[in-house]
Length: 507
Image (cartoon, rainbow, N blue to C red; front, side, top):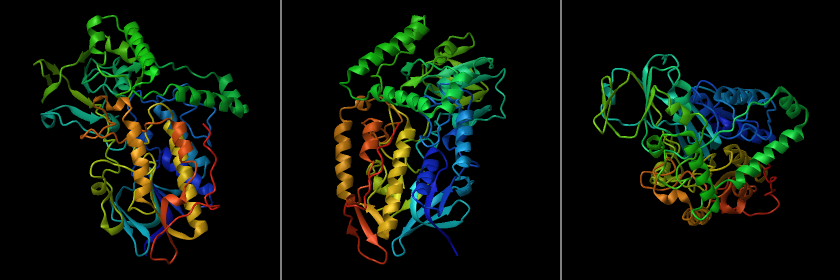
């Protein structure tokens, strides 16, 4: 006998936690959270490299329904964020829903019974009326295909699979990449290694990180005065909304450019090094990075920046395209994630045997980033075109969780066996996104994780977090085809009193 649940959530990070909490708020109790790792935390469990931290302030990078007055500093590090998440799973009473070390390999819709059948890597099966993917963007590392890498006699690992058993002290280390992970790793290990060689493909736009510890008095005030903490969160939210710039004609882009260039000039006196670190693409085309110790680390006597490409990995080092060989015994690949390949490694089969990846044909799309025609009762959190370029992703995840929880409640109240977004609704939303996307700096041609190999921007939202949260504050049943219990044919949903609006998300 197969076990059956009302809702199966895939992923036990921030998204899975928010989803489980919102379902519990709606009185939905028959839930399971399926997590491939050995514990909760999602990307904050997987990415445990030295210096790992968030580039969104702690009081904004936390759940509105689980504030933490005890954040130690402005920008929390990975251990503290993981500790916060683990505590939330316990305090909110959803830890018992989590089934760890469960890697889902296939999800298949059975239209006759209107259930999803999920199978994990061990062959176990589970049935669910509704499936919510909360696996996020940064779950599958992109391992660079460097010529000769297999012949390297030293140690190689990706930043997201950090080898804590491999002591870097006194070693000659190569860091490949200068993205978000690398600019945290380089300063953290530069003082311990004998030699650090940083291979840069393209320089990043970097702004300073004003990271201050909170005093005990400040923490106690946050704890005793909830409104004081909320005011800080609101100020941070407003600041990030105002400073979000992704349109090419936004005057703020010019201000940010001058700010970043001024910071680079202030930190790097050597004109040759400064030129190597100056981007040649518009600010915002790639992710803007936040760091106050990366530039100083590059100027240490034991650190070298290499801007030539990698021609060949040798048994004992790396040869650059200029012919110079760099002897190293450890290679750390800071080469990012397969962010555009949504649900990579999980086969999802919808109605009529439609494969989700084949349906997308290399360009992932979803209505509001959450629903796909042909895939009933299936929702994505942090799905296509919902990545935030300026504010906290936690705001997006909470709003999406509320939206999906509304859908589940309405299905229960209406005795609906399935809801499936209509192709017309999907196309209308996609057309609006495409029109807004044409005005963004992401079309400037630079290579980034925002874009597929074909140049399609499938990760970014061309609007602010506030715009998106307001847009999905209400689950519109009229945008979905519905089936009642026992009915064979779908009918269009109707918007009426059953579609009670949820509150506009607060920051």
